[in-house]
Length: 182
Image 1: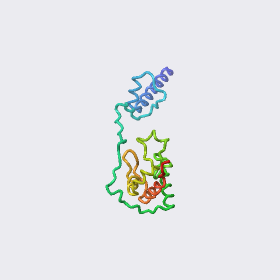
Image 2: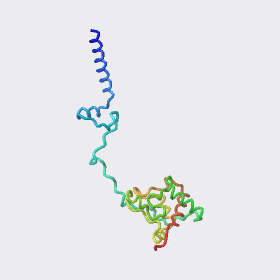
Image 3: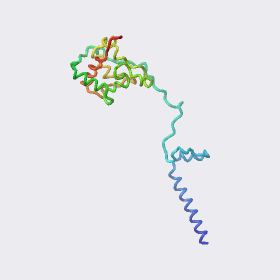
Image 4: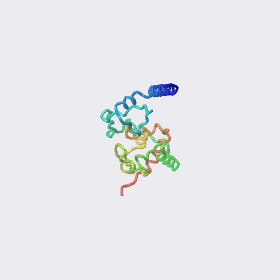
């Protein structure tokens, strides 16, 4: 009789434990597990993140490849207040290379002709800053506005990470990248 009582108490304890444990299990997982006879061993039973929607349900990615500059009409008339000195060029290069400031090398590369390693990850080929013909056709003001405002979805706006003076230093540095075609 004593053994029967112990077995009944153990069975009752087991039932209470199972009920208690299942009360804390997310409903989506318990429904998922009752519909399948096997459990994915890599799935964390306590994971409550929603399932990823099927690819067809995802919103289509916006096409930024055709976006262009939105420069004011008088951008070319904006004068560079920072003299192009060796000190300014050094500061501009540091900002151009700095990941937390210009981060220009990600797209344009260290030399300004394009970062071949990242081209596949870009929405379109970046401007070649070494093209002397193209670069001399732009005023410092135009370059400043392009560095400052960027292009939505293509080039980040430098004004979010650099002061106005820092952006002018970058313009002075970019001017040194232009080379004659060989």
